[in-house]
Length: 377
Image (cartoon, rainbow, N blue to C red):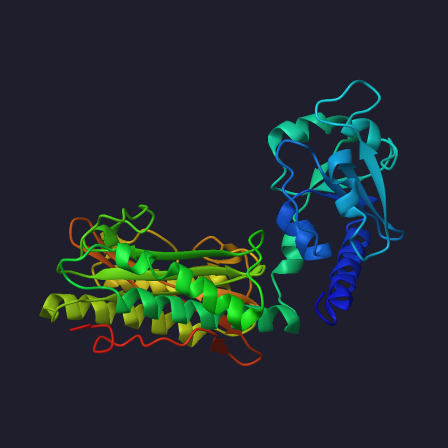
């Protein structure tokens, strides 16, 4: 286990306990795999078997676990106790609800996570749970440890995107970029000492024009590079922490119209960057960016917000979107990625992983963004 990581978990748990106390709750039931990993470092896959971490303002952590996981849970190096249930489903008296009833009183005020499945929520309705994004709130602002881990992931994102672009040629398939994934994985193992398959993932995405106008279409390995704006994405989770780098690139000399749209995309990004600092409304950032793009005549070419939070997950709060009530704070991590899309022609979007600092921002990804650099001829 990494040096100092136990102190990190204790710090997170103490913040959660104080938040539970502030909300005048008796306990929080933590069920998402990411939240449990965030608080304890424990990795598992529950499948259909309910699994709970019960946290109170004071006292030991309590894990309510199927017997199958109990021996694994016992290895968690934090003060805790374990309540087993036999299996799912199980006979009356041996179910997860019977185990929970040993630690949740009928008058306890409890909170559950917004991500809890509806089926499990219905099973717990006799506890009258309140939905509260407690851990999600804690994860909004990163600790120095988390920032260092995300910064390391960002460096591998840049490497992955370079591999994608190096493999791109007009007339070839996008498969060439995907073929570099084992090489990137090996680089991560060499640099980090491990690639934990439970908390790591690699996605080198390549949208060849015109499919770059459909940013959530899964690219087919048989897609062929031709003329038009292509978008390459390196979207990684490295041993629990995520980052992303994305660039629009061309494999030919651009036309005047293509260069103009590319320049407008860069201008939209700069509007966002000029606003980034603690105390700024995430709504206002997106609103100003989108207002600019609409004023430039691209109102019909917008598909998504300016950005999103990055941390353990590739997408988490804060949300840089019109209607968001998030306020930027020092040590938040976000993407900046306003896009312009023409169906049948292609899309224009860069993305970087960006840290909010005390007086502005700092990009953790470091990849060229100008048109000359992104014209690969």
